Image (cartoon, rainbow, N blue to C red; front, top):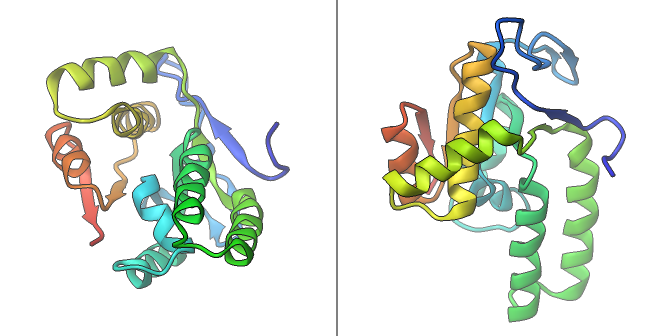
Length: 176
């Protein structure tokens, strides 16, 4: 079940206009191509856990409208739970981060894992050295751009994913 305010986007590649809310009004005003960016979960986690690249991530999240795959919240929660289990996050901190993550979700846009995204991700894992979730993120960004006609930055801190995304023609913003 989706949180109120969060949007899900299944890019449509038909001759009709793409089913993407790129001309909607958001918290930061009218959304245009330069306001969108695709955030991989490797960068999203830096928003909630202080580590190298956290400052840059926060600035990018202020500059761009957040777009990611529908898997991002689950993937982020998994990363946070692993950090809690390892003792890197104290239970109290985990609860505060989890609450913030749920609150922030209302401002995020998601690309749904439709048939086209899944098919493209399957092709990607055969052509590149990326793992499943990374391929799903790249495929989501590629399909969003194809459907919307927008060129948006792909923001990641995963080197293998960066290389594969670059090979697919995506514009990369690298976060250490």
